Each structure stands twice: as structure tokens, then as C-alpha cells.
Length: 142
Image (tube, rainbow, N blue to C red; front, side):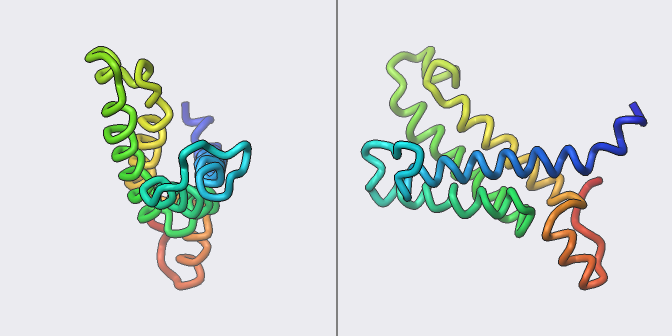
């Protein structure tokens, strides 16, 4: 197991980059109409969520203000899950299971971002680079 520890930082960076960019793509659908856009996404609630996804996704991807961005994005996904997926579920079974109410991606993002709040930006991030220049240690559990 110790042999894998040397890959922890680059793999976490890659995970943060991929998850952040995928999240930003969802925001791009909502506010910029990218990738086919999404119908009915012109109300204020959806636009606000879209901007959080777009901006937060890029901040997380590159590791800038990671903990704050991840906290906001995690909260947004929790709100989206309960206000959209659970609220629109047709059956009691669908209200309980994310796969049945099509909310599994919202739950996934919520928990990945919640993990990032506690883990921090990691060593391969803009946050770590800025902390190094200031002479402080990067805020990371690793």
C-alpha cells in the first residue's frame, strides 16, 4: 500500500481537475447554452445554480479557493437534489433512491465536494502555490 502513496497527490489533482471541469460543463449548459443547453433553464434559480457550477467548477479544477468553492458547490448540489429530484419524484420509492429520481449525479457531486472541503486543495493546486509564496504551508490533510 505504501508504494501507492507517492501517487496520492497527482491522482487527487487529476480527480479535482476532472470533477471540476465536468461540473463547469454542467454550468455551461445552464447559463451559456453549451452542449445543447437545457430547456427551461432561464429562470433566476437555475441561472444562479448554473453560475455557481460554472465558476465553482473552474475554481475547483485549478485549485483556487478550493475549500470555499467546494463548500458552496456541495451545498448547491444538496439543494438541487432535495428541491428538484426528490420534490419531483413520482413515488415514495423514487423519493428515497437517487437512482430512481435521477439525482445520483447531484448526490455524487455533493459528496465529492464535501470531501474536498475537508481534504483541501492538495499540493498540486494554485492554493498551494500561493501559500508557498507567502511562506505558509498549504492547507491539506495530506
